Image 1: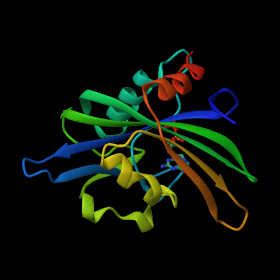
Image 2: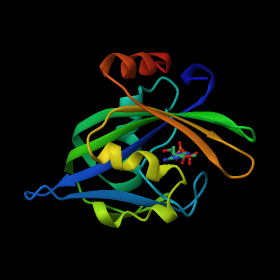
Image 3: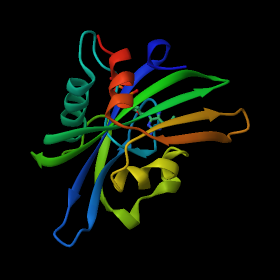
Image 4: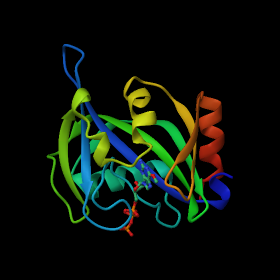
Length: 172
Ligand SMILES: COc1nc(N)nc2c1ncn2[C@H]1C[C@H](O)[C@@H](COP(=O)(O)OP(=O)(O)OP(=O)(O)O)O1
């Protein structure tokens, strides 16, 4: 199961790093559609012919008003389940941010300190990979959702070659 036969999405996490090494993460409370009522990064589906990088930048600006001078492709989520379509989600972090944070039709943004992330209000698997992502890990994570609401997971470190291989399968 992979990008070639799954619905493709991007998700972007804006991060600010303070001088003392403390980090803040901008999350958005989803106001409609998939994941409504949950805190998440900013993202969505690529438009026809759009690269993943361009999609990530567009969705970031549309959903929270920010642009970035440092977008980093850090991981891939391969999601499957009995009662839902397969999803492949390309994960980015965004630093060196420009613009003003603004609420959109889709997202209500809010900054959280690393120790304040509201995991109970996020997608259930978020707590399994966000701490690693915030710590700078690059990864491929496989999640399999069961009918009982449980989720099996396998999270592996990924290098440039593995991430590029997955990205190339999604190239328009
Ligand atoms: C199931 O678990 C998920 N976990 C996480 N962390 N993120 C997820 C999960 N499922 C979906 N997402 C992300 C992927 C995208 O960033 C959004 C959903 O995007 P959306 O459906 O809003 O896509 P758009 O292209 O913006 O859609 P419309 O323009 O049609 O509103 O959630």
